[in-house]
Length: 166
Image 1 (cartoon, rainbow, N blue to C red):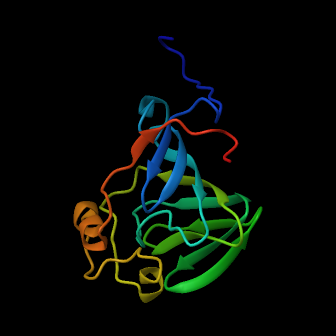
Image 2 (tube, one colour):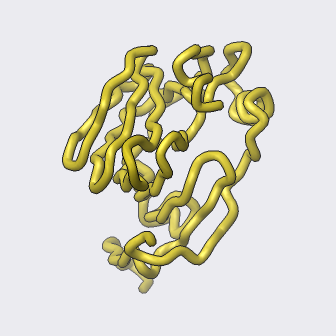
Image 3 (cartoon, rainbow, N blue to C red):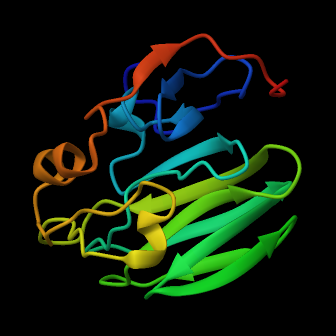
């Protein structure tokens, strides 16, 4: 393995995570093996209808979303944008956004985010995101503060998840 620059993984074998508010996910380098993916994070998220993937936020990096199955609602700069299978969304650095499961069944979304930007995520107040329990009450640049304001757990818990999701 020493000196090897490439990495292969299968969704059925990667680390799974669960969060009481933010759904389930399959990680490729988000927590490990981070040494393989230093420039970006990539995960596949499974969201129930009405379930947000995160708090409404903006980051100093590009983020990319591809809906693999089901339907979602994106809130981008306080504008609602319906997404369905195979829709792609790009949010440039500094763009406030949120992805929420929609429709009749769970949504599966490929999410990719850069890691090299300078600065901290920003959590602005959003009336639209608040409908899903995914907004802070007072703008903040601290994830810990943002999650606490929303009453969310700060971290995802490791979980053994089935692929494909049930």
